[in-house]
Image (cartoon, rainbow, N blue to C red; front, side, top):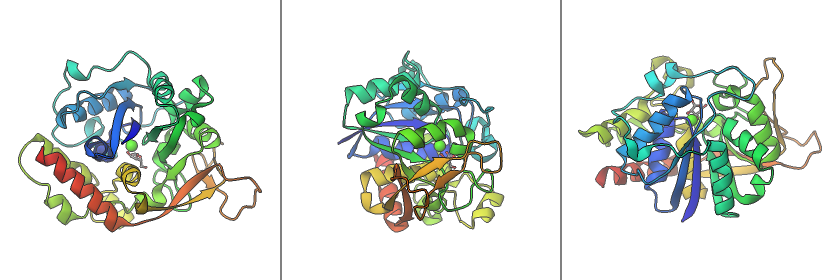
Length: 311
Ligand code: BDR
Ligand code: CA
């Protein structure tokens, strides 16, 4: 099994990603770190705790992280994910999921050192905690086996500005730092906008009970306007695609590129810039997912959610 630390801002699609990661036998989730993003960090932390309670994984430690971007103003997305940043039928967290004392950035560094050379870090929210962890431990990338990021739009349009994707746009300075220094594998909007769960597969999850209602609600969090904008039938479950790739590499086609992130206060702020044809002459500093096998993704995700429901 693969030790995995997830930095997250749940978030409906984060919740699906967490359900998948917490269930799958190929992954051993060593902790969750929370960050501002879809909602303020107090809410995303509470949501992460409730998710652990809902799926019966109160053994997984949680570390609470940054309540604001490095320099940008806080910008949350309850208008997309619902009040408090999530839908579903979540229990109030209990003492069993009380966050550890360490800040998320410190916790990331501790876990990377503990599982040196073996840990996968999956960042599925704004990159503030990761940037802070890099400031504490500049050798973090060498300690990691893999650093996968749901964020950015390499060649596709953005979802919060014409160019920028939400996680990168929420903290462009942190995204810049993570892309420059941490050799990310980028799972961006190029592949995640169409990473939905088809209606018939969502219907298959609809049963009675808080877990059942939550698993059926999370993949359908978009309103009519969002569905029309992206021409999809159910919501984009961006974050779950990054986790699905960790359990089945054949889901994504990935190519190395030189990348950076726009930080000027202009239209390109938060834009993932990908040197598509090598004009900079720079060596690749990461990789980008370009194509996805959505059939396979649906299979991996549905099977996992079904198993979550059957325990
Ligand atoms: C990303 O932004 C958040 O709203 C989602 O949870 C996902 O991580 C998609 O742009
Ligand atoms: Ca997220």
